[in-house]
Figure 1 (cartoon, one colour):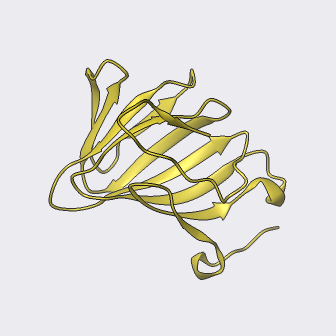
Figure 2: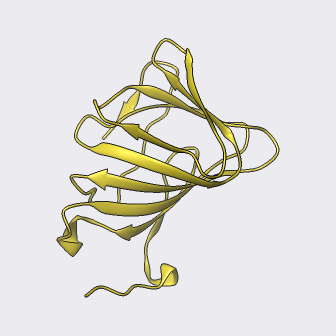
Amino acid sequence: MIIRDKSESPTVDWGNGLSTRLLVESDNMGFAVAETFVRAGSKSALQYRNHLEACYCIAGSGEIATADGSVSGVLKPGVLYALDKNDPHYLIAAPGEDLHLISVFNPPIRGDEQHTLSEDGFSAY
């Protein structure tokens, strides 16, 4: 059994926010869990080429958009989105408050990953 206090977990600046890595690859669970904050007003071009990801919004608001910029869904507390095809996407946090997500990755992330965000393409790990 794993019982872990958030204060015992590493927090990384993933590019446009902070992510506390609660369960990671070395925990041998077959998936990873992170608490992720997305900075208010930010737009992140992301793609997980080696992981499937599901995110559940617990606070804040924003949008998830496809690679061509078409809005796929509005994010607000109680909404989940899943990237089931390693989808390149834009994660957009509304201005005014951070977007707060619980993220699950399969296979699990190591826990130290960070994005390199630029206008040139989708950051991936």
